[in-house]
Amino acid sequence: MAVSLPAAELAGIFVSCVLYGIYLVTLGMAGRVLLTTRSGRRRPRSRINRIVVAVSAILFVNATLDLALIFNTILEAFVSYDGPGGPEHVFKNGSGWESFTKAFCVGVQTLTGDAILIYRCWFIWSKSWRIIGLPILLWLGTLTCQVGLLVLLRSIVFGQTNSGNVLPWGLGFWALTISTNIFTTSVIVYRIWGVEQQSKKYRSSDFFLNQPESMLTRSMRNIVESGMIYTVASILELAAFTTQSTLSYPVSAMALHSVGITFNLIIIRGAPSRPDDPVSEIQVHFSESSPAGSNH
Image (cartoon, rainbow, N blue to C red; front, side):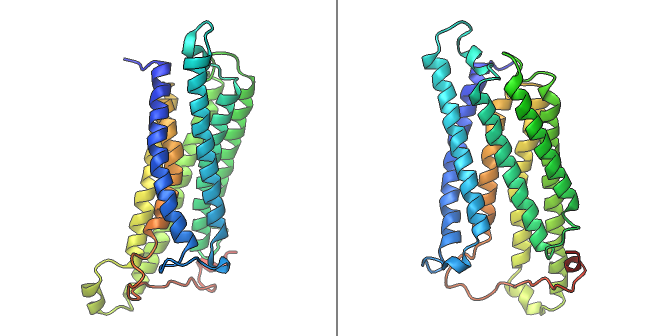
């Protein structure tokens, strides 16, 4: 039994509210890691990662705007509008500014998340441009699909939000972002795994007895588990968009907020657990003379 459009929209706002609350909690925890030291003091400006802070701000503003637009659409459909077609008329009005802006928010959130993932890959691979060549091409393809989708949303007529003209752009958008995430995450994990294997040569047997899981192993698990959240949400959205199901609305909300949640989780789980922890971390310095570092 197909879910009606009004019911799907209500499910979408429910999912958005729940995930937005989770996102705010993780944002607060990530902000503490970014802006304070392990002892709780404010971090000096020179030690603040401004790129990560800027991305956090963009994701927060965009997620908040998307939720506000959903609330506005719900109010317009069930409270303000009393014309023919009822709430479904409002939800199907693909040329409305709300639909256009919501599609814009999803695109910004996705492209920003993909961009920071590519940046992490570039940094971990000693700022090698060759290793991120394919992810950049995939990201540009995603951007092209997003622009094409927005152009169509500005010109389509009533009831054609999931029309044949829009469908290819949406499918391309989600397929490319899934490919970007899977490839880039795999490359990052492979790099960390390689360094982990090299570092094992310089550890004593007592190290493995006292610390069965190294910092690098935890980092790999952190990246894989966090990345799976967004990848699964994107795959579900791709499936819903392909079948032109109304479930695309709640799944789209899941995909949008999963970007910010996974971004924050990587920051939180990558931080030291206690301020009085002994120095057990392995600092990995990627040599500029290494093979990966020679491709600038």
